[in-house]
Each structure stands twice: as C-alpha cells, then as structure tokens.
Image 1: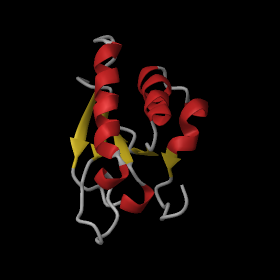
Image 2: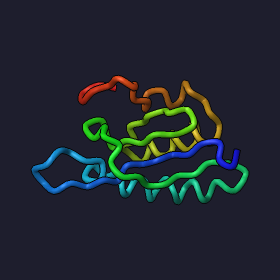
Image 3: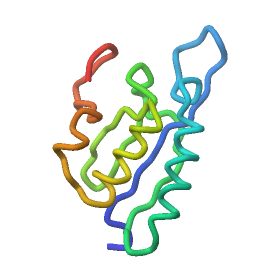
Length: 111
C-alpha cells in the first residue's frame, strides 16, 4: 500500500448565516498546521494529509476522516493536531486519541 493512512480535512466555507462549516471553524489553519508538522515527520511515515470539500458532518467540526479505517475526528485545536499526528498517524496509540474520535452515528452536540 502506497499510503497506510490517508487523512482528509474538510475546509469547506459557507457564507455567514448559512449552515455552520468547518472552514469557518478554523479547519483551514489546522489543516495547514497538520500538513507542516506531517512534512517534518519525515518519509518513514506512510500517510498523506490533504484538504477536502464538505464531508457533511459540519456541526461536529472541524472534522476530518482517515482511511482505510474510516475513523472520524473532531480536530479543533493545535493540541488536537499534535495528538492526531503523534498518537494516531505516527504511533497508533488509541488510548491517547480516543477523545477526538467522532462516532459514526454522532449528531451535533455529541461525539
């Protein structure tokens, strides 16, 4: 497999007054930070981080999804970026990132 994990971070933005969107909740800056930190991680890690359009879980965001597992994460702060990079992408320690996982059936106001 070329990439072991492929992470998509929503950066969709909507006009004020419309449905909430990840881009308006800071995902663009968080994506940039995650990509910068991932690039510094070096080539020994086989993952790719990239932007996506709307993933339709806007009220839970900023949101990202990672494949092949299909894990959904709420990534809201710089600390969340660090946690996802270190404990999900690099070392896979679920006990360290489980608080960021968004359940498949989650709706706004819950994970």
